[in-house]
Image 1 (tube, rainbow, N blue to C red):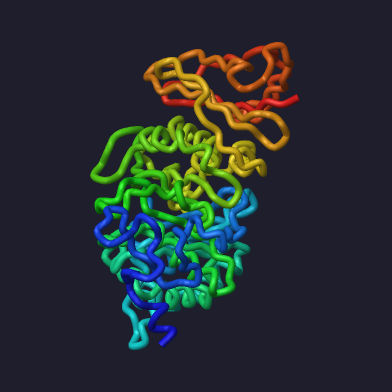
Image 2: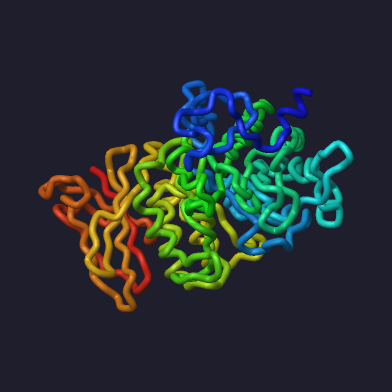
Length: 423
């Protein structure tokens, strides 16, 4: 009976209804059956604590941007091999994450099974292989009845699925938001967070409800408003697609996503990160100059660095971008303060991020179609104008000496110059 209650679908609760959620109120939302059920919203429950994971933004690889639903165990094994051999693992990339379309059916007891044609060895064997390479393993599910790829979701099976993931050796769960009907996102994600915690295994929890208003009256919340003690990262926008700017269906170009995420910098911190979606570097829709910009700016805003290319076949140029340890060090800085734009002159911008050593990472960003000189003034960065600061160019990998007052560089169209300042 207890198990059936835990696995029951969302139900309307009449007892202990939170204030403002009385029947007939537009604020009515669904409560979930879980260990943190109380009169409080899940994110406000004083009994809830963060899971203590992802103290720096997660780094790894995800299958979706390159492979979509065309994913199988052979491809994942090749990626794990490449992550170990290419230097990505040693540079900090940890997670190998299978996105949508790995699911098969449920057995007679309701246990989720992998697609036997794509994953004939099973998920545990694949996770064991990834672990044998010194990496961690991630998987995907959905808070609805179906995933976005119309495979089986986890609604009504949250604890059962979490237990399966733990038994398989999963270290990371990306949890999507398709086919969820009128579910309340905060409650739905809290339920899966509780399920993951109940397994006793450390599993990083990626909230993937896109950061856009829910289409129902009962759920207009944004994940950064409630996600800090529920997940480790939350998507800030719809999906990315491999383009500088624009919209393709429900997906957005790189700078569109950047601009929607930038105002949220104060919500990010150790264990809870804004997620502007995965890297497109190496997939061919943008130039290498534009890929330099994405990698730099994702590091500036303390975003997860989740590669989305076929790293078993990547070019030297792509490898050089993804393995830039100077830029990775900014992303992984232990202070955990996300950077943001501090100056904008038309298409010319200055971005700044405070670092644990008291210095700053700075990006000079040129959105225009022509080369341009861009200046970062110390006063815009929080430094006195008369202080001398050491400058390191993070793409040239060289020291530029000490500079007082400001720094100026010529920046390519759609490009960046990224520096680190310190004393």
